[in-house]
Amino acid sequence: MPLGDKCNYLCPYFKCNKKALMITMKYMKGNPYKIGKCRWVGDTCITGDCQYAYCEKRALLPGNRCAFAMRRKEENEKEEEYEEDEVESRVKEILSKKLGGKGIEGI
Image 1: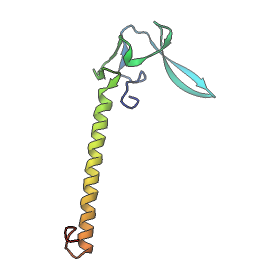
Image 2: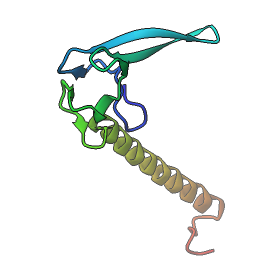
Image 3: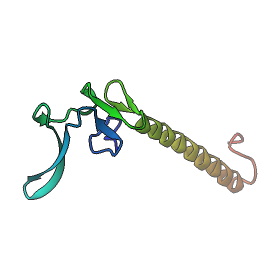
Image 4: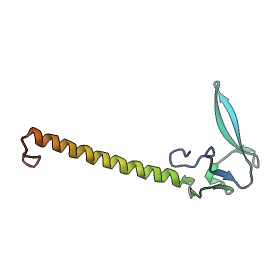
C-alpha cells in the first residue's frame, strides 16, 4: 500500500509498462526487506516518477501521489472531527448535570 501519500512499487496495483519491475530481497544487518529493481535501467525503481509506471486502478496522480492514500487521509480527518464533536457534546452534557441543569452558558 502507499507510503504516506506516495505511490509504492510493492502495491499490488502498481505496474510497469516495460515489464521491467523485479522485486528482490535485500538483507541489512540480518533483516530482510523487499526492494524494487528496474531491469531496463539496472537501478532501483523510482515508482511514479518513471514514465512507464501506471496503476491498474488509475490511482496514480502527478507528483507520485496515490489517490487511495489521499482519500483515506481525508476520511481519517473527518472521523477525527466527528469524534471531537461527540466528546465535546458529552462533556457539555456532564457539566450541565453537575451544575444542576444551568448549562455551560450560565457559568
